[in-house]
Image (tube, rainbow, N blue to C red; front, side, top):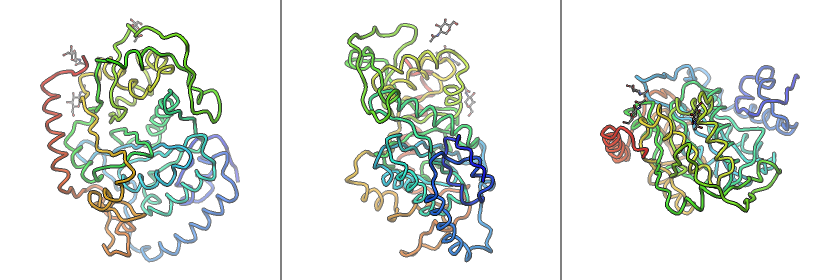
Length: 389
Ligand SMILES: *[C@@H]1O[C@H](CO)[C@@H](O)[C@H](O)[C@H]1NC(C)=O
Ligand SMILES: *[C@@H]1O[C@H](CO)[C@@H](O)[C@H](O)[C@H]1NC(C)=O
Ligand SMILES: *[C@@H]1O[C@H](CO)[C@@H](O)[C@H](O)[C@H]1NC(C)=O
């Protein structure tokens, strides 16, 4: 079996297509015999469960319709550190939809056993993933220091991987293992179907206030980039002056970025993205400033930016069960039932173990409130040509 230990992606599509092709393409350097055993075992189980549904043709990725006349799609980058795999799995179940694309990243300090365990769990918990092949796990993980720029570097790398993996998504969203959605994907897709696909949502301000001395001027070196298993940074003894070649913007780290803006950041066809990246490599909390500063300094994108982070995600572990039962209607260990789930709704079955049309959504009451918020933001955005001041 030819193994090429070069690809950074550990793909969940591994078992489905058989070994020859995908293994060669996606194999990850540390996949061991035990992992292969897990996969063989899992495919044996799924062979049994799949046989009953064998006759009915199930929709596959080619049945998903794309383009401005159809529903949009999101690319989710979900990241966490050692011990976060359970939370990441729960978050994935809460935001899963066959239209979307997902890239999961456990930082470099996570043992490989946890990473492999996550792959196996994802693979069993949402059967539709095996058909739609829309979830991947980063195999060659990188460091992520909470305060430094390694997180930003990982985000940009994830964005570039997602661009290459899938040409069907419209918006890029990053979530940490601590986030949890307050809205179903059906509602989110429904509301975003009214939004021009080239709009980005970035909460931003150039009024730096206290952040100027605390965030802009200090120079730091992110230790995660240079030393394995370091989660800290070194602070230089001298500060730098606030930059003049561009205007510094800051805001919520929670952003929804259009595909065209991600292409601009990743492919970088002018010097703005690179100049700012150099600057933010040594900044504290670069994720609260990089995208904000790039988008607001770019003539092509500053007028198609809405000043809001649309905060539809929560940050408190204590209330997740409540959100599941009251908002998402999600059962334990199961995906949020959307219009794509076509199985029977009984307490012992998972309606999403069978699936139908992923080109329709069934919005619920929450979509009305969110739709109103979206409409008022879009109205405000149309009035002002740019909020980047
Ligand atoms: C953004 O997309 C809309 C159509 O949805 C188009 O009319 C507009 O010209 C686009 N703007 C830019 C700056 O690309
Ligand atoms: C980009 O380059 C141009 C000239 O090539 C220069 O005038 C401009 O200041 C540069 N922009 C940044 C953000 O460095
Ligand atoms: C964006 O808006 C500014 C200010 O209204 C305007 O000067 C500029 O030409 C616009 N840029 C584009 C690409 O439309």
